[in-house]
Length: 292
Image (tube, rainbow, N blue to C red; front, side, top):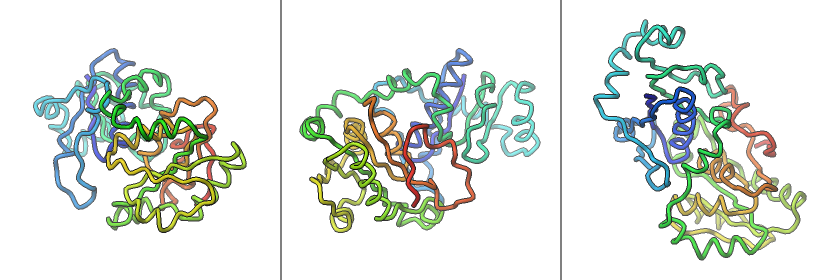
């Protein structure tokens, strides 16, 4: 069995599932998800809840007894180091992510591994991309509720533009680490899109649409998508022909799940406000980076 700890919002949970699924496939074993941390209150992270259930994949939840089997030695520094360096010596292996770059050794971890990290790179699951896309198929309810917006999106040269504010603005630790994309970034991104694919219509998604209406003014047709539903927003981003994303795992997945073979994806660079963090593996090959 592989167990993956879930932390953060929908986009983070998707990364944590996808990477762990690859490891489970390699080992030919079951994957279960530890959702206990989502239920804890902390000043470091915005409190979240389990969000993968609105996809059609089969997401199994680990029992507390199963989780405890892996974590009973975690407070012992010797065991943590030994698990990382010599995982094959132990029945249960605990792996904590170090940094944000892709770690090739991840794909060699054995059965009975507990994963604690974000694993934000498609390199962790690129070999099973089709299975991940299948697992992240939206359920019929989400698709049905999104029909009107989807029809508008499908009939034009549509570009999703995602603005992440929320706790990136209100939570000081998130603001310092992540930062927010500037208005100038979005202006440059729109110009690049037009230069690449011609005239477009913008579909703006955000957790702060009022700020977007006041600050993002463009000369082309612009729609502010007000579904008030995370899953509808993500689904509709995947239906756009092209994507302008924020430094957000949520819109990263909106672009990655977009199946348009000719899609243009614009992404901010660097990914984090803390520029010392190695993020070279977060952005897939072919996506266009614009400095922010």
